[in-house]
Length: 276
Image (cartoon, rainbow, N blue to C red; front, side, top):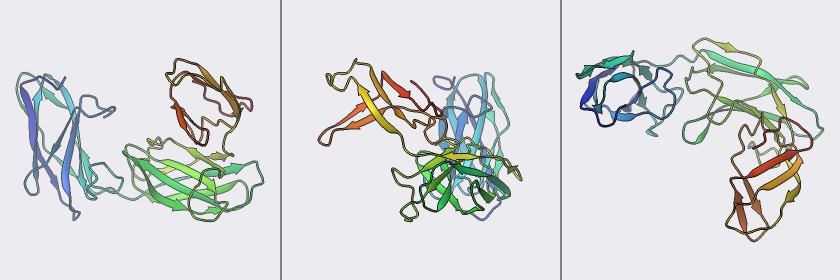
């Protein structure tokens, strides 16, 4: 564990490129860098930047660092980054130096888009990454007739991954709107993890219409909760555009109610239904 210890990891982080920004480092106790970091540190001084992670207990630690070019304190695919090898703290302080490098824009993501309906409108595709808030990384055109083909070229490798969303732009405003036909692959946290020079193919997307609610049982009750609610309908596509259902928001035109627990989704179309 990191908290409560008396040791530290110190070192310097170098960068030979031309991009500017603060150097931010994060510390984990697992090699996959999964979960929230144990600690953050901001580099001090010119290149190389010095860092310190204090208050550590014995254990094996891993670091990942970025040059925060856009100042949002989140890793972005095009920002310089680097990671350390495993650093062991064993009854003494430890030192680790490592470097940041500019990522190569040499990967691609491609697939096909299918749609079984007949609603008109051009098909647009967006590539997303989500590090705190959803950000559009790139847009792409589609080619051919149904199924349409899409491809994102010159993609940066990114360990936290991407998501791709396709939609029928029925009103031709260049933005996916509520009620428009859409679908996605990956999730908002990004699950399409491409590595350097990888051509990731077969990332197919099925577009469908928005969910239609046909019944809510019970449709009234106390605002204090503790009542199980069943929302019935069709098109609750859990495995595409809505990988996880965290709750249901109801609005009667005057008041808005959030159902975040004890919600059962009953989809009579059985199209990728996630129940919970």
